[in-house]
Length: 374
Image (tube, rainbow, N blue to C red; front, side, top):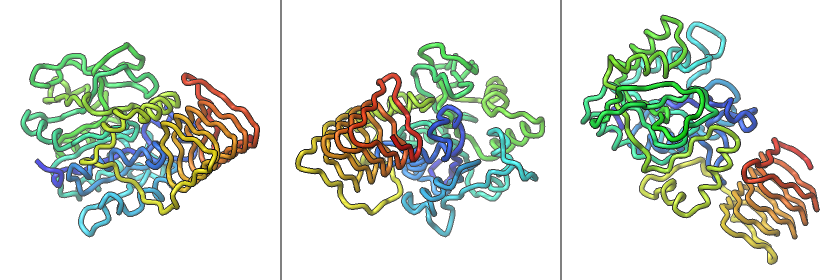
């Protein structure tokens, strides 16, 4: 098996309820991350770097910024005559209403699957920040003879992303013999990242059967239901950098983790780069009295104050005498002279006037929505 025989499916809107502040006007996939990326860049890049040449992105609502970001797929080498990137419509089959669950969304785009020449399907969400070599996953799936392979990690149970699929019993050969859906946290577990690989024919038949019975949960009605009937294997990705975004707090925590050198090394592997939309901006300008420490600063910024342990997106302006610490400032945010900002997540085009002091805490960052003026 190689990447060209695999069809990629990415869900751009799943888990938005876990990050409702940042997804009020955008999809989960278009949430900004790490000074220049969007969350969809990670599954897209992982798929492309593993040889996948055809990827469908299933949308639902608020997808204008997503369309603007991915465009024709050129940054990922997906703007091509054959295969390439497809933004799939948000409507259920034979209906003008938007899909409400994963099975409905897949079945609504069953024709896209039917018309694809690939033999396998790899399905992924956008709330996992990771850099993973899917070619190793393909090899493991083929060598094990599994019907389905699910990527999982050992870690603290996610608590705000609905029901989480947990691998309770895994045999030495990797086959899952016991799974459960746990709506509440229960400490350290081996849980699914919602990255699933299987043959396309099997995928279509399972989804069609579930849809015919009005079943809505892919985890419960497709995977959990068939654990005794299909060879479902787990692929452990715990050696990768994996960040599960399950809340505004986890978004902040994972962003701060990337400031650590070792975390950046694992996430941004030069041999498996994370691609994104290129933006032609001037280099950032640092004033004579500015000071920047342990921060990621995008191009196009003007820094005249002090920045420490921050993630700064393009077009941000920080005034003279201003001090910004442990914060995430998104595109075109303006911090006035002598302002003091600590543990803040500022969405796009936020303005904080001069001498204003605004402080949160590492375990309770302050969020400012788009175009907030303080």
